[in-house]
Length: 150
Image (cartoon, rainbow, N blue to C red; front, side):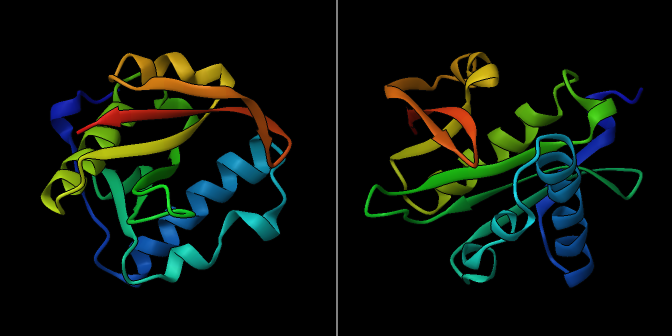
């Protein structure tokens, strides 16, 4: 397995990179977790204010995530974080998360919210996020709203 020094996280710049990110999300969320395909890719994906990031190793997309400028009047929101199955627990998700937070800071955001699947909330807590509210279901999966001051 490559070290994190061999991984580049960057903004999506081409239609092929965006398609690669969507393909990864479909494999993870639809294929592995049973999220309905018709809700995985949404209108926020084509919003010009949405920031899409990918983690690359040797030119291959191994992770992705997005930052929305505002969701339902609650401010910036990180979501659709996905990492290739064989690259999980190796720091890739943390690199994508840090990159998206940096993008938020650069845009003047002071806080970011996300909806963490219950089984990975400790990952986000380890990155400084705190739980807000009760467990809720999203796409049939238990989640927690979590926030972080940037």
